Amino acid sequence: MINFDNAATTYPKPLSVRRAVDDAIRKYGGNAGRGGHSLAMRTSEALYSARETVADFFGAVPENVVFTMNCTYALNMAIQGIMCDGGHIIISSMEHNSVARPVTALAMKKNVTLSVAEVFPEDNLTIESFRRLIRSDTRAVVCTLAGNVTGQILPYREIAGICRENNICFIADGAQLCGIREVKLSDGINILCTAGHKGLYGITGTGLLVTDGKYPIKPVIQGGTGSNSMSLLQPDILPDSLESGTPNVIGAMSVKAGIEFIRKTGMQKIEQHENLLCRHFISLLEKNRDFVVYREPAAEYVPIVSFNIKDIPSERTAAYLAEKGFGLRAGFHCSALAHASLGTKDGTVRFAPSVFNSISETDRLFAELRQHRTITV
Image 1 (cartoon, rainbow, N blue to C red):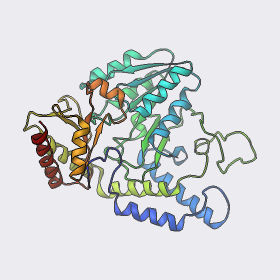
Image 2: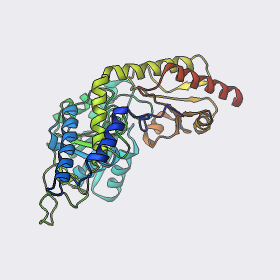
Image 3: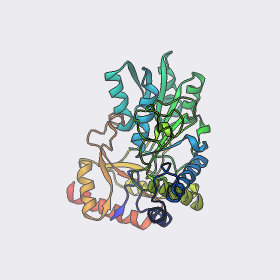
Image 4: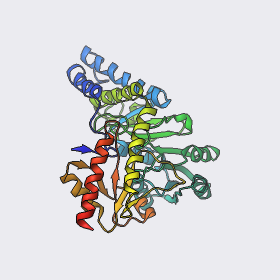
């Protein structure tokens, strides 16, 4: 199958990542931070090396890099850890359910109030919609750097500036932008949450929480950390306070290798190639009025194209393409707020190429789409 569903998880993985996983299985079989024998020590050193690579990539210190199961876990840890004592929180209208659901749950059960800032194609309108919602009790703003449905890039640096002016914690969801464009904590991000298995090319089951340390994050999970074992209280130092249980060393090594692949290949080169495929695909779709592309001229996008064929449900289109050997995601992409904003009541089909896809594969995809339209319409 030709995978055009890389916004969900990148596949195939670089050869260097596959080799790193194999290497980790063979060499790093100890439990990091648990034991002074050579196997445990060697594994601890490997994990710290991965932490250093991530820290350098995002402009953090290694101790403030927390490995998680995925971006959803990282976002839950950040949101619940910052908002556990109540207050007002603002999110965007393009947020993934990994943000929308935990903040809704907090608003239903605790003394947390929620506001949703509308996202517009024009950055200045989006910035103002966030600014208008700031209150004296606003404790956090959670904002996706790029939406996972259309790929629209939000003006996150300006939003971060508003947070800084008002002493508000800025939590960023970088799942769709990290690895495509340079993202640093110095952009004004206090807590960056991202996936290890998407643009960073690590294996599934990997995520990251990277913090500047300005806002303490209360742990929502307690347990063994390898430190202060005689205390029944969770350690209050990072990364221990947020990393309970045996760490995913194999996953961490895959993320390290993925970041090294990005650096070797060149982040700009990766984005240029994927954007080339998106522009080519859009040019093919725009030749026929039966295709609807969900992009606005005033907005900027990561390499994602959401589209539909008029009068054909998105899931039917994706099912047809799957039969022909193409993997694209259809439906609502776990983003209820984004689809409500877009007015896409039947969802969309999402084209998300990777650096390993080609123009010829894109042409073959469009040929099948045209055939599907001819048969169905």
